[in-house]
Amino acid sequence: MPNLRDFERRLGGLVEGLFSKAFRSGVQPVELAKTLIKEQDAGRSVSLSEIWAPNRFAFSLAPDDAERFQQAEAALSGELAQVARENADERGWGLMGPVEITFTTDKSLRKGDFLCDASLVQGPQPVEPESSPPAGTPVLVVREDGRRREVPLRSELATIGRLDECEVVLKDEGASRRHAQVRTKGGITTITDLGSTNGTRVNGDTIGSRQLHDGDKITIGSTVLEFRPGTRPGNRGV
Image (cartoon, rainbow, N blue to C red):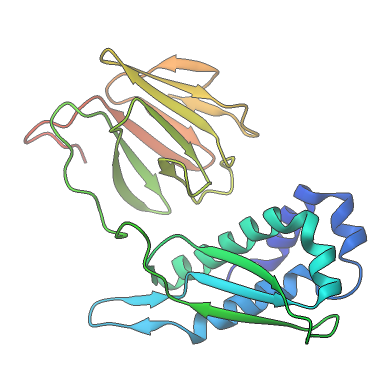
């Protein structure tokens, strides 16, 4: 189960003073996280080859609680989404699309009460491994949590980080939300750190910006990404 203390610590760091003052009474963020996990567990769907977990969570809050949460809603939504992804990942469940968190106000609820509706929603694109990119397309080989995956760099710019909208999404808590950016132009690929908290290393050296060469190893948190300048038949790496 995701560490709920880490959830509170991350959220507290994001909203700082607001976290201790606004959340002193009424619904507590950790209560929302616990309920999200419970509803995700209860709402999973078993198919012939996969277990799918809910990826959309609609919270209904009492007016007083909704008003208190308003300023921290974006931060809270992001951290709750991470809890949902961690819970599904630890159990080996699939997600049909990006995790969505919404908040609405229900005047029939009393302060401290809330509801959570969990559902499975198909994303705009299937959550499936991409087909092999054309020859010559640069690739990042990502090794994370003991797993290996290839991410083709199909566009000129690709951002690496924890945000879902990044082209290379990492689950590593040592990665910043927008950690680094890779740019490919004229056959040259460079990586630039985006002011990340823990820095970006290439072959063990902390860098600001550096050109990448075949086999270069990029370290972000505990995740290692190996750069390949282009896929070639019979030479896809190991």
